[in-house]
Length: 338
Ligand code: MG
Image 1: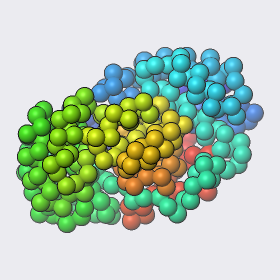
Image 2: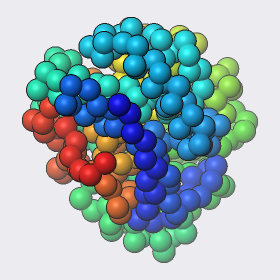
Image 3: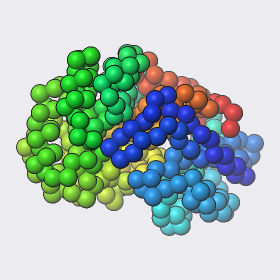
Image 4: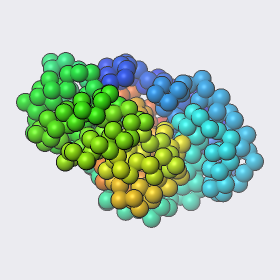
């Protein structure tokens, strides 16, 4: 059986990045049930990838037909069938994959990280993201983020210097900068990153549009902080062509279509000598907790989507002094009313 619900997530602060601005986010939740056990999943449709709640629900209904034909312990076969059948709205696939792995973990009465052989003590610190804003509001947000040791700062609306100078006047915490594809020429990107290097910046994420790989490689050769891919990478097939342009990749379950693809991506990226960041969209504790189970594999985590909303319907992974804390509950370790 499969149930679907849309839930409106309320952002604590207006969320502005290079592309757009929002106050709320509508995510699609699924509950799959078999043999008296439920698995919960979540899709966070993203306009950047042409996704919306309505199309996501259509794809989840398509996936339901596939689920009905399989033994759910054969989740590798299910992934293959989903990949063949559902070629866009990857967030819909992510919702099914998360719910399925939650169900499998609960069936074995085991947390997912334990099924994967990962040590929960090895989780990284998550950064806390600060959207684009005016200096007065940035000050308020930096105060709200006092308990988080690493900040991720969104830029890309031509006021980078103002934003970073303001943040730097308030805190000396390590900063990660995300430009969300904003800089259109390699010269502009280089000039901005060279200035940022003087500001104790840990890395720069997606400085240029997703397809501008040669230009990004040119920039990367001239800067001395890591350059991390986000919009340039969705699935495992994208990674091979990124090795010249980027030092690491930001894996998000909503882009990859779930945990099983993300695990393959981690392996391929590591073989290419690239670092792993686990990131997220605006998501509740369902999708964030699922990703956190993979986080012992990651150098960097940006799993704060649930920390940016004020009405999280679920409870799962915790955060202590920034470090992700995985619990002992089976599956993805999430509780709450569906
Ligand atoms: Mg990003």
